[in-house]
Image (tube, rainbow, N blue to C red; front, side, top):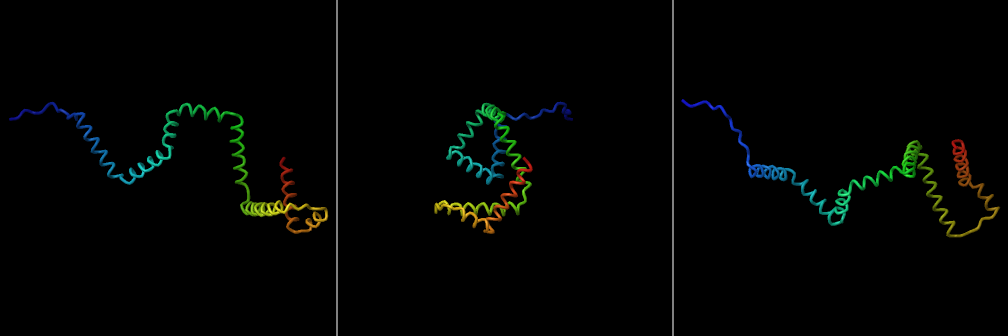
Length: 157
């Protein structure tokens, strides 16, 4: 009769076996993700050819210095004011009526085109032309808009 086994010896893979297993897993992963790997390689090639890869590598190698510079720049009062102003402007833009903004911006574009025409002609305007222009409905609307803007602006400052 055979003797019972009392000690179980676990097989420890050798470094060569571990390397072989790792290579097998890597090859299997490459096969399963072939398209993604090829796209990644193409991206890296493009970054290398454009010089951006070298830039990113240098940036990552000196990341602590870059972070210190970025933090010191962000702590300056001018930068803090800029960030605050951008946030205020973004908030104000979010409150604007899109239809009114579209109408006003369309008018600004048209006005700039007309202004360019006037600059090319280099004509002088006299007092009679000015009074006549005030009777023009388009000029009257623009002046009404400007006066309305100035009133609203003045109420808030």
